Length: 214
Image (cartoon, rainbow, N blue to C red; front, top):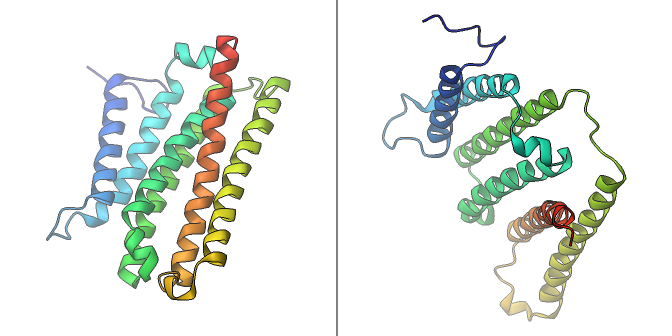
C-alpha cells in the first residue's frame, strides 16, 4: 500500500505517527529517563515534528460535529484552558524552584518545558485557523460573551492581588520572613494565570448556557 503525501491528503497512519512523535517528545521533555543523557536532545525535535505532522493531518481531516456546533471563540477557549492548565501544572511542579531561585540548569530545564508547551499551543492555534478558512470568527454574541468573560477574569485577578495586599499589609513583620521577592513574584504569576483561567472558563460556560437557552 502506498501512503499519500502527508502534506496533501490525510491518512490515519500519518496522523498516528504524528501523535506518537508528539507523545514521545512530551515524555522526553517532561519526564526524561533518569541516569541517561542520550535521549535528552530528542524531546524538542520529536515534539516539533510530531506536532507539525499531526496538525497538518488534522487540518486536512474532515470537520467534526463539534466544530459545526461550537463557535470559533469557544474552541479557542477550550484550547486556552488546556494550555493554561498545563502551564499551571508545570509552575506548581516547580514552585520550590520559583520560590528559592533557579540555577542555570534548573532555568534551562524549566524553560524547555514551557517552550514545548508554547510550541504545541502555537501549532494547534495555527491548525484551528487553517480549518476555519474564511469563516466568520466573531459576531455580536461573541463580542458580548468575550467582554463578560474578560470582566470575570479581571475580577478574579483583582481579588487575588487585593488578597495578597491585605496579607502583606496586615501581617506582622516577623511572620513575613517567607515573603521574599521571588515568592511574591511567584504568587503574582499564579494570580495572573488564575485570572486567565477564570476568563476562558467563563467563555466556555457562557457559550454552553447560550446553547442550552438558559
